Amino acid sequence: MKKGFTLAEVLITLGIIGVIAALTLPGLLAEYSKLVVETKLKKFYTQINQAVALSEAQYGSREYWYANSNQVDTDADGNPVPGSSTAEKWFMKYIGNNMTVVRVNYDDNARPTFFFKDGTALKMLTGSVISEQDGGMRDWVFYTSYPDKCLAIYGTEVNARGKCAWPFYYQPEESENWGPYHKSKRGFEPYSYGWSGTLNQAQSYCRGTRPEYCTLLIQLNGWKIPDDYPWKVHY
Image (cartoon, rainbow, N blue to C red):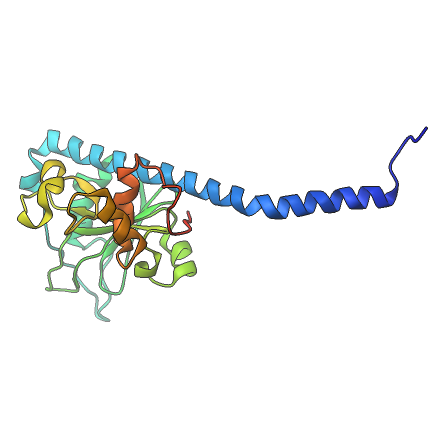
């Protein structure tokens, strides 16, 4: 009676296991990445709009304390002075005090990025705001990993949209340009400028030349990445 395996049999078995792992592991990792991104997107959306609601209870309607400009002091070398950004002060007073912000960085245009404890980040996108120049606080991008990790893969925020960088928009004031979707919500919402309100258009934009609509597409799918999603996501 045979009581064991020969070396050849063991090697063949290990080889088969290796082939199976090579075939299945990438798919498993991709599914895990999708799950993490879905979880982080939904968590961020819930937390930041809860923060807005909490500040609204304390300071009144968000329309009255919303600010749409940013100014930053600079040092003798023209570099932004940390903590001087009016956008940073606004965010930390009305939003960040109800979220876990661990640090704040400025880019070359002195636009702040807020880093959260869970390894995500939120960056203000709009405007050049050095010294006396104003820049809006409407457009934001949420990173499901810290920006350096995301941008190391895709190079720029534009290239990373719908993959590890997720555009949002915040303007609680009434605006005819944004249609009924933003008029009814008016919190931090997925970017949807020019959206007709149809799922087909959101899908077409996300798959085409406007991946900033991918955040909206995922929201419309219950914060689940669709099975036919066109991009590989990262966290």
